[in-house]
Image (cartoon, rainbow over all chains, first blue to last red; front, side, top):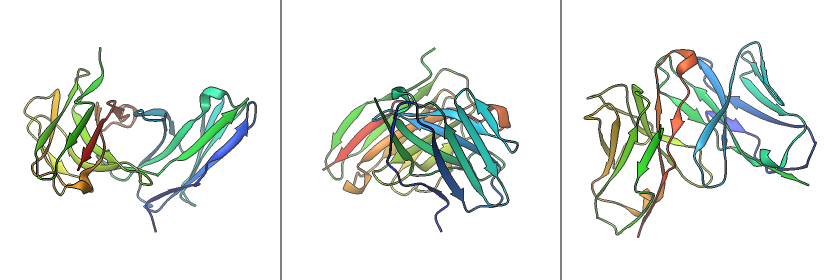
Length: 111
Length: 115
C-alpha cells in the first residue's frame, strides 16, 4: 500500500462550486498533516495544517480522521485562482524530517 | 528577505558529468531538505540536514551527495549524472521540529535534464 494516496483527479468544476479532496495514509504513527498547493511549474506552498479537531481557513476546511487514517480538504465557492495541484502531506516521524507527499490532485476551476 | 533560493534554475548535462546545485535560505532555519519531483510521483526526499555540519539520507539518496558547511547553504552534488536523474529538484527549509514551526518553505526548483 502506498504511504499517502490521493484522489487521482483531475477535478474540473465551475466557479462557485464546492469541491472535496480525499487522502489516506498508511502509517498509523504519523504525527502531523498538511495540505500544500502547487501551481504549474512552481514550488509547493503550505495551504494549511490539518488538526485533529478539524480547522477552517476562509473557504478552506480540513478534516482529519485518525481512526480511518483519512484526511480531507473542502473548498467552498471555488475561484479561478484556486486552480492548482493540491498535495496531501503526512509527517511520519517525531523529528519532522520525514514528510511524505501524495502525488497530488489537480483542480481546474472554469468560468 | 529572499526566502529560499536555488541555483541554477535550469541545466542540461551529459551522462557522466558532475554538477552541484546550490540552495540558500535567509530565514535562519535549522532544517534543510533536498527533494526531487518526477511526473506521476510525489516529491521524494533525497537528503536532509538538521543543522550546520550534519546531513542524513532520505528516501532516494543513491547517486547524490550533500554538504551543509554553513547554516544558510545546502549543496546537492551529482558526481556522475545519469538519465534517471532527470527531474525537478526542490530545496526546502524549516525552522524547527516544533509543530507550529514545522512548515517547509520551498525554493523555486531546478530543472535538470541528463542526456
